[in-house]
Image (cartoon, helix red, strand yellow):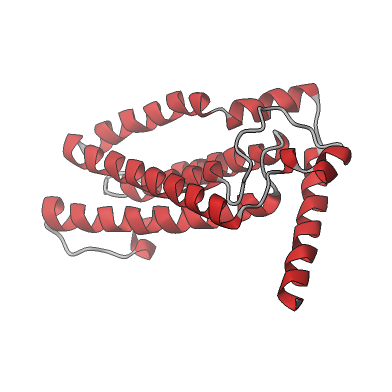
Length: 211
C-alpha cells in the first residue's frame, strides 16, 4: 500500500511537470521539436560522424566503433520494448488527465506504453559509443565533440516531451539506461581495439576523456 501510494505520488508529480514543460510551445518550437524527434533527421548527422570515424580512425577501427554503436542502439531498443510492456505505463497521449490538461500532441500517439523512452536511451547510447570511439585517435582532442554529442542526445530526448509522447520520468530513465549501455559497449569496444589492433595496455574512461 505504501509503495503504491509513493508510486502514485511520483506519477502525479511527473504528470504535472510534463504538462508544464509541454506547455512551453509555439509554432517555431513545435517545428524544431518535431525535427529533433524525427529519426530521419538523425541520418545526416550520424553520416557525418561515420565519415570522420573513417577519416580519423581508419577503416578497421571505424567499422568496430560503428558496430558498437549499432549494438548499443539495438540493446536499448529491445530493452525499452521489454520494459514498456512489463511496466505498462500509458503514454501521456493516452491519458485523459493529460489531454484534459492541455497536452500538446504533435505526433501520432504510437504504442500504448511509454516507460522508458527508447529515443532517449538510443540517443545517449550512440553518443557515448561515439565519444569513446573517437578517443581511439590519439592525435586529436575531442572535447568539443563530446559536448556536442551529449547536447544532441539531450535535445533528442526532451523533444519527446514536447511532441507529447513521453513523461519527463520516461526521458530521465531512458537517458540513464542509454548512458550506461553506451558506456559499457563503448568501453568494451575500446578494450578490444587497444588489445587486438593497437597492441597497447587498455586504459580507463578517465584517461580516455582527459586526452
